[in-house]
Amino acid sequence: MKRLMLYIIMVCASCTRTGVAAPEMTVTGTENRGNYECRSVEFDVGNDERIKGYLLVPDRAADEKCPAIILLHDHGARFDIGKEKLVRPPCAPEHIARSSREWTGKYFDGAYFGDSLAALGYVVFVTDALYWGERSSEKAQEWSRLNFGKPSDREVIKRLKNEVFEEQQAVYDYCMAEYGMEWAEKILEDDIASVNLVASLPFVDKRRIGAFGFSMGAHRCWLLAAHSRKVRCGAAVCWMTVLEDYDADSPSDLSMRISRLRSEMDFPEIGKLLSHKNMLFISGTDDPLFPATSVEKAYVKLHGSYGKKGVLRTEFMEGGHHCGTKVQEAVIQFFDNNL
Image 1 (cartoon, rainbow, N blue to C red):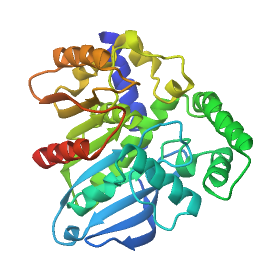
Image 2: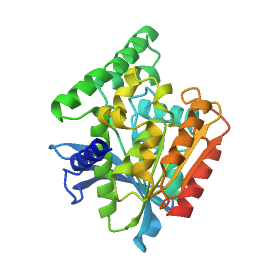
Image 3: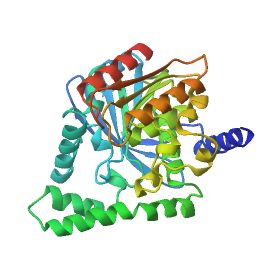
Image 4: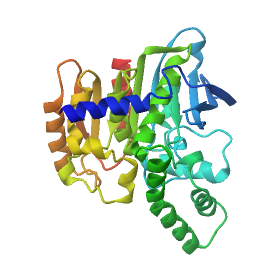
């Protein structure tokens, strides 16, 4: 346990080394969407690196401080889009717009969850994790152009998709060499920079900041809630299991692997770090990636790890690896109650 706490201190120090002060942000474009505005922004995450994001600001923010939600996109082996999985992309190339619409149709019943939250009065912020969206590779973008553009050679499209998937190992190795940390730690560091930025905005009530994620985004959500004091609550959909049932050999795990943390804790034991916060975990009854029997074991452990200060909700909803309308309604109700 002492080694665990030392690691937590190390990871928090690493994740905040960009400074407590808010990152510098530049607005590069705006789009009016009825009762809220979509702003395209760029901001610093340290190491002379600037990344892009979407900031959705409800009209009521002109008169009062609003609650805010950090959105964390999934993995999905789809790298050409990231933030576009959760917010309708403004002025995007046609292949990105089509890719985005297909994704939300498949996993969110056609809804852009970020836009739904902004229309309800929440400030919403989402960025690309490293290797997704505008931080993806040229091969990922070429695959997208061919797959969602004019009819193209299907074998070329398949080859590009496989190459992009396999290059996750190279991204992991790059993070170790360039940043001295694992890929998931770099993602966490960037996510904490997002929280620091949002907390600094004059129209955001920094006491009311939540986080939401689906699939890999759920994994990011509970890590972020555990390591950022500014995140008050979180909703994690379709990512929870126990280590003994988890396939850590897939290249997709490389973006979620923090080896030192796993050596000390099972996934649901993250509750030790979350126990002072209100959290919602939802899983599908027929999720092939996170079978209900394993999730149930994880939920039992999670409740056993939780303290008395925060409130933990764990539940199953009918369906598979999906964040459909009913799940979204449950998440919105959770944020309405907590933010």
